[in-house]
Length: 225
Image (cartoon, rainbow, N blue to C red; front, side, top):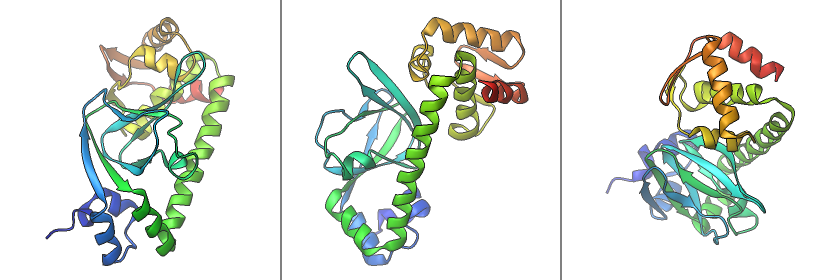
């Protein structure tokens, strides 16, 4: 029988040093589920029993606070979802929702911990992923509180262009209201900032289709805040 994990992009990115027996353990301890846009992958407040890996697609991470919901970040496959919760509090501290059709791998936590104990390279990889996530959270927090709306919007567009889509032409995966939520601004403020970017020749936009036409200026706005 073919081992599904051998050819998985998750394996190619992080499990390349695994032995055959470890891959067999992983293959027998996971389930792949397909999610449609808008489906909840992880729900805040629910007990966490699996390690979750986004194999295909894109998702938003968001947390419900005392007053409202706050989008924390967007992620694209391949990436882990909810590792801090899995190894920390056990109760999901945030929700994850698919923003495109997505394939998600649910791995048994016991099998995952066994792999961590047996494979030093894999453990180092997971530690690196957690460290990168924490540093990114610090950076985003500083930017969101210290930059003006135009600077934060420039950050979002550059994030879409350089990391999520790797192209200067893309379809906005979030509504203007969601983008505003992400950067702590109202929908009207985001709409005005986008209109200014269009007027200044920085972007072209039709519906949710965006083309960055002056990336140098967009980066300057991002840097200056």
